[in-house]
Length: 578
Image (cartoon, rainbow, N blue to C red):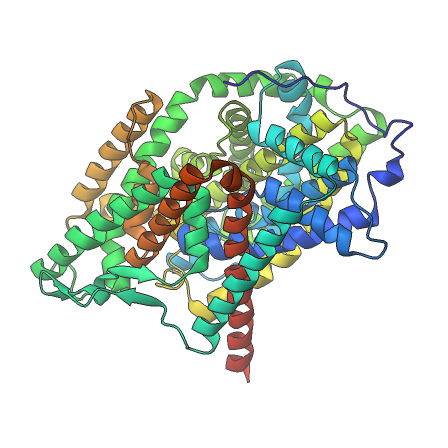
């Protein structure tokens, strides 16, 4: 664990040489919310395709700095203005996760449930607000008293300082902009004009099954290349290994034996999802078990919330807002997921405890296990009855966990820069409002254009939520023939690989990424792996250049295709409504 950086004294207002107007400004908030909308669309599109999403703290800092320089006056953001901007941006960007648009909501659609509509958006907003308030309540305990590192927050503060010292983010900003434009152009040529194919497939048959029916090829997707470049070679090659085993070996055997009646993504993923979910769930169980100290620490944190909470009027406002958000979450869990008030209240209480565990894990490891917290809540609340209600229990834990972790990264950066906690809290809460307003309409457009659980939007993260819910509710009857054995084997393998990784055994693949390889189309896995390998080669041959530009290039590829893909989906939805 890295040693904590020196921490300036916290404050509730700007110091005399940095008036509050130079921290909370229209330029800072406006650029942050605009960048956040871009991050939200990118995370939604990327998450529904691959199961991955990114908090975007460093990307938001660079983009907000560059965007503000284009606004009237062409004045640079100060360090504290940039901190407000990244806080607002990342709160917006986390909306797909905090609104459960990558997990419980699409999982409900996969399970055949009715679309929860705007009740899900209201529930997600309430959970996002609770996540921010939870982060503020835990801030003093985790950041000031225990001085947990929160490395992403430290890196964000250093980037903001570097931007101010150099006077700009010219090279990373240009790299991100040009990569984004190129990715958008390729996406429009592929999806709008049909000038490019969706993927290039091998012209062969595997055990008598055409490679195209198994997805054995490479997707022509700048976003997937960017995902691989950002995720790194361990994740990228692990996804590829999962696809090779699942789609290259098991899938043709299933078709040949008649266990699956026909080749194709939809019929095959219904079986392959089970070993994939087993891998992810096994890893999650070991991850949660290894964080038992975080559970005991979280309980101590909860007992000490009083001294760490805001004082005076701020405390009263925070208490009222938390009470309103909690009541709204309990009330909306019914129309969204069919949960009764009592079970929703119990699930929310459990979810907030798990969010505290998640916050401590983020501070110690810099990994945000919000999905693991959601699945843990699903298992713990298995007695709530139906699969939709079990999905609701997962949502009530995963939503605030994701937002609390992202907010604490931002608060750590603000702490190192000497920012006002009050103003940063205001930016985070504003971001939750804009995030709900942006993410849910875009989600509905994407799903109406492409469906959910399809090759276009496979939603691997949602598949895992649905599988756990059905397994808890129905037991082995939820699985197709032979899938139970595969799921148990996946569970054991995932647990063993995660344990080996935690023992720092080198060369161990990521079990979560292996599981994603079983669920996402194989052509996606190949593209992600190609991006990961290309990024690794760049970092090896030109380490200084790659350190400066690789995150911006990856983010540009993700953002460019995501925005262009959303535009195409809007056009398709409008055409269908005529």
